Length: 94
Image (cartoon, rainbow, N blue to C red):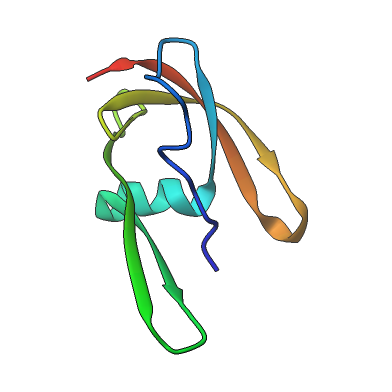
């Protein structure tokens, strides 16, 4: 099951030096599909598909561009059950 990610929960604009955490499955979706969706099914069977992040990954510079802001992986943390969360460093706007 994909982790829930809030991309707009940050108040104000991202600036150089800001950090954020994203699960590995989100970054993998960006690399493969150029976007990350959250799909939920409620008890009545209604499906909700929310586009949370649009972006791209430049493998040469190792920079993610997510919703118009550029990010570089700073560190990663392995969590129980094999999950990995990456800390990204803001390196400017596109």
